[in-house]
Length: 198
Length: 236
Image (cartoon, rainbow over all chains, first blue to last red):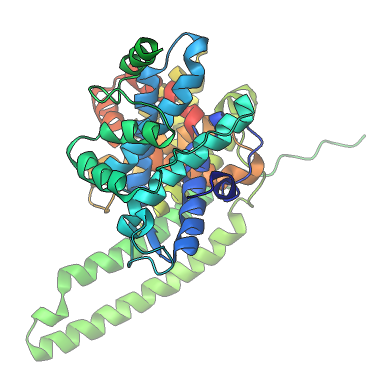
């Protein structure tokens, strides 16, 4: 299973809180580049990044975050995770990375080998989320025990291709939460599910 | 009694003239070769045309080198990173500061957009600044940037751009996108060591927002432009 703490070391240093830095294009880009490069070394894969696509993704992500941001500060914590899911939605829709070849150092049958681009984007979102949560709430989110289950990643790749919103639910699932599969990328709907399930 | 030293003459007009001359020579040589195309002529005429072109290009190169040498003597030395637009507006020398910072930033953005051959006019940047700085009651920064955008486009601070189709932006959008990027960067919060990265990010953001930026500029919609500046300057 991937270690999010280790991955956070690849993120560039900043004097600003991460929740602010990640909303700046220059940090977001530097972080994505550094993370993808580090992950590429780890799994033995060279990734190419399309900078123009990455900028479009960043713009769409911020617009989506601004549209759904809750006014109530009590919902802020839940929205942190949701915003990471929105980031994954935009990354999987725009897909700014391309693996030059199959990873040479990934475990056979692993998610990294199966879909290196999707894997690195997902881990990036989880890592940024985890680092921001540690900074804001002094806690590190834990990954679900079946994080490496290849069937989930098959399903993720298949479904995200048909419905972009699926990525938001997938990320919540990896963090051990139950998404609202009817409206996975609607924050209000997710909150209602949480309230209903207690 | 000691007399105060006279201010050194403003070298900007000379810089502008030399840049214009170099631009003309480079573009002219390229246009001539594209127009004549010796390869398409029969053999004896092709040889003659090729020789003529080489001689013309040699003359142009000589003048270009002389102009470059002169230009280097009057070019502004790179100084500290540009202050924000607000700071410039408060400064008595804001016009010159905006002209040189705007010129350098536009050149960098156009290079990033793969359009290095496009001409940038520092004199026009100053003129646009004068127009906006003279407007009373323009206190909101985003509104000021919007007015400055329209003024910069109106005085054609970026020239010969419409014929340049680069991979990332169509020629007609190049000037609005480049101007938006520079003003977005000028207003962004950035530490000194991130100045360059911030400009590159502003350019990328501007390209990503190309449709909205161009639509607002074409319509002369300063309210929409101001809203774009207000929203995105925090995200550079």
